[in-house]
Length: 77
Image: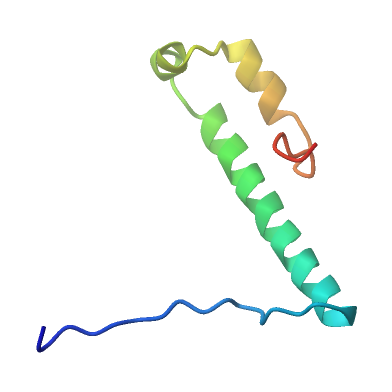
């Protein structure tokens, strides 16, 4: 199309295969994941009882999950 513009999404860090750059990139990704987990747990704690019932969770389940430390990642085993 005549006026269509394309955009490329670039990574914050270039692909580094070794050394300090890789360590820094890994640390940055982990920090981003921890911040996302903390935010998700805060949002989960603010859900109403009706919303919790819809997803099949109790207030006790939410309390237990929201009290977990931010560095505990349920997807990382």
